[in-house]
Amino acid sequence: MHTFKMAQYDAAEAWRNTVQWWGASAKAMAAYPGMSLLPWPVFRMMGAWGRVVERACARITAVPDWNLDAVVGEDGRAHVVSTQVEMARPFGDLVRFQVGDRAPMARKVLLCAPLSGHYATLLRPTVASLLPDADVWITQWRNAREVPLAAGGFDVEDYTAYLYDFFHHLGPVHVVAVCQPAPLALVATALLARQAPDRAPTSLTLIGGPVDTHAAPTEVTDFGARVTLGQLDASVIQEVGLSQPGAGRAVYPGMVQLAGFMAMNAQTHAKAFGEQIAREARGEASDHDRHNRFYDEYLAVLDMPAEFYLSTVGRIFQGNEVGRNAFTFRGEAVDLGWIKHTALMVVEGADDDISAPGQCKAALDLCPNIPARRKSYHLEPGAGHYGIFAGKSWRENIRPLVLAVMDAKPAPKTRPVRKGGRDTPIPTDHTPI
Image (cartoon, rainbow, N blue to C red):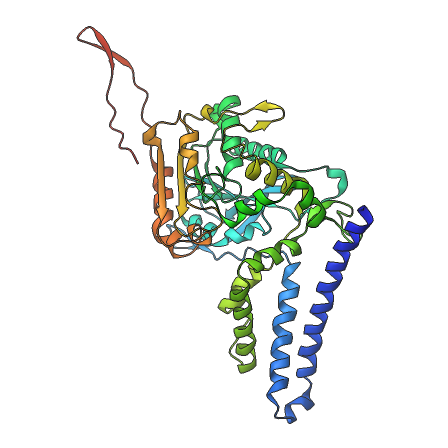
């Protein structure tokens, strides 16, 4: 069985290489000088098809660069942005975006990027929008095929432990968890609130995450309910081939994930690639046009550790452990009620078809000991899953609300005073968000 799973992995990689070679060959043949003497448009279309196919296949195994623009500071100068690994771990790093020659900012923000098939660079627009106003860190997960077997396994509890360590390292920080990490960021915050409250996040913003997967059905939750973990293990789990550092590691391959992503909107993707081939043939395409900017990121996928994928399906989706406040960590029950002093904001998109409205909002009720004035909720009209952390909706509507939550001061502690023979608290001037 192990040999078969490894053969599957290598066969898929061989097929990708073959199609990429076909594209390169078609591009080279069409570029042959003699072809320009033949007035047949078929050669232009062949070359265009080759350029698009070769680029698409090459992007699947590429690790995208951050390519962030310089940040203009209050001094009017452009400050170059670089990345620095602050904590290195086998399956992922804590990365800081270092803005050169800029004084520390009042806001410290940690973006929890999803481990769901794409690289952390998927949040490039989110990072770029926050850098002018905050010092920013991000969780940068590693392609599992690059992690040697000696590093051991990695499941949802290991993921939670990584978040716990990153939160603890940064101390009181504003955490923004986008999509998949939302439920586990809640758990890590609860653990810190219990074990090291002085290091717990100051605020926690959950954006379109599957906190209570039974609150609102989607294709994703329906799929999770239909299949068993055994079926998933047999159908989508493979083992990394011998040519990679993680040879023999069981993974949910990036190419299998990508096929699933594209199948959900197959007609849209087919139309987009058909139009791009036509633009290439007319000479209207460019390396940085809208199509290439989007698909250079979308097609870049990573392999997920099999343990993480299967435990996510089994515990987060099927078992709904976080949604039932029944998550266990290292054999001990975790109570989300331990969170008391962290401000909690939830953002959902009205048209989100991956984490439907209601799934993330459940976090507000799961944390009963956070004062109501420290909780907030925003439902963005007309926004899908991607739009709530990137694009116009994020920039113009959601980002200002998130920054307002970060800047809000917690109500000062009350002290009893004697009035009319009874102890009553001194009123505060705190205005609820």
